[in-house]
Length: 258
Image 1: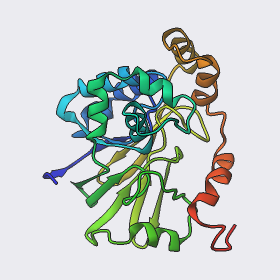
Image 2 (image 1 turned 90 degrees about the horizontal axis):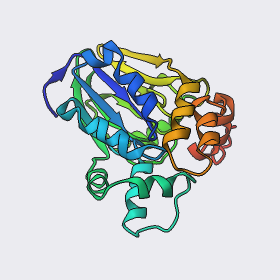
Image 3 (image 1 turned 60 degrees about the horizontal axis):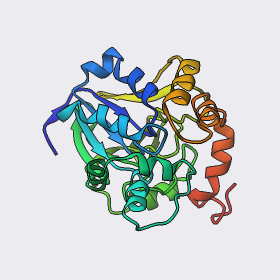
């Protein structure tokens, strides 16, 4: 953990969508932030190599946390798995250069930083203990107690991604922040991110989505890219549909809560 930061721009779930990332990086408050923190699922999408190259060109301004989808691309490329749940995953894995695969393989699962007004903040992809567990804005407190088990009591804020829906809530006295998704938002279109310090300010950057769909269709060789881009960039998945799909994965059915 380094010294204290005043402002951090938190970007999650870019999923290889270069136009959305470019739009957020052009935001004055992102440019002015002390650092940009990535909370995983950076590459699994139509332009993984281009997204990585852009982010790595920013050097020490970017602090990295890997996600389950990044891990899956590495495992696929290294022959440790033969399939990826996300249909675009194998394409994205093959599109990465070998040095990029090695870079993703070395990403940490968590990162702890001190932020003005928030103290010690832990950044992760899904939960502090696992890169694909599900917690939601309406997850029960018992579920949050499970995922916080063993966490340093000095950590007062946890920043996660994974579910592509932005929210801020309290759970057992800890502030939980999900910035939402840059490239595959659920609920409403736009590139979602967060400005952290001294509070948690959820942001959404509008950008030219028809232009981005056309650009991805022209530049990406993934079969069916036009349909993929239209579906995800236009956020065809509603927040209610996403919560319904994710809900059983946070253990609520086993607890008898629905």
